[in-house]
Image (cartoon, rainbow, N blue to C red):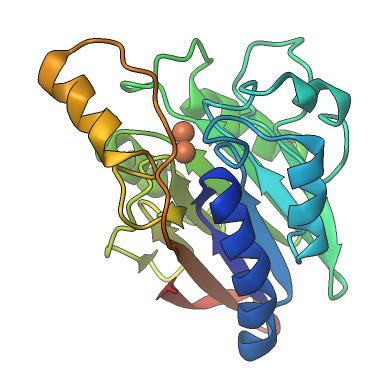
Amino acid sequence: MKILVIGDIVGESGVEKAKIVIPQIKKEENIDFVIVNGENSAGGMGITEKIFKQLLNCGANVVTMGNHTWGKKDIFSFIDEPQIIRPANYPKGVVGKGYGIYECKNKKIAVINLIGRTDMNVLSENPFIKINEILEEIKGKYDYSVLDFHAEATAEKIAMGHYLTGRVDIIFGTHTHVQTADERILENKTAYITDVGMTGPEKSVIGMDIGVSLKRFETTLPEKYKLAGGDCICNACIFEINDEKRTIMKITRITR
Ligand SMILES: [Fe+2]
Ligand SMILES: [Fe+2]
């Protein structure tokens, strides 16, 4: 089983890049399953139904979200679609779901989305407690488990990796928009990377216009963010599982 993960897709130009790159990687690398983080895909904040469908059409099996889940009101019209999940540790009663179980090559893949609490400015429940509840809920209902931990702090993500070693098969981070070079297989059991990176404008400050970003830092005034223009890069990761032994074999980082 080969699972492709595409980090935060930033803006419509990022979506266009994903539309080209996902089918290419799928074909070249014989990818079976694709997970895409779509929290910044519509104008840099949130996602629309149109973009959600475009991502599915170009090969995504699941779209995960993050702190910008509710950035576009459109989401309330398709949040119940099975292929979109949002952080599971929002308070009880919030619309949508925090995980899904998907069929692929006669296997069931549980994909879970959580959001961190360090420097995230989101009122969420403790992800370290929530994950235990979820793993209990889905016990016996899946073959492989994958977690998108959408978090700012490297330490929180690394801690989650160690916390879930041997309990979740693949853990990848999103949100910082910069791919980290720390991919590893923890205790030969759990594939881990702190951040997959982004698919969005290369000449930018994590996808946003450099001038606007500099003005914000220089003046501290609340200048409105603007998406950067220009060519996009795509950051992604491929996770390879040996289906016979049910073990993680390899993690490959990609930049296109
Ligand atoms: Fe984010
Ligand atoms: Fe993001």
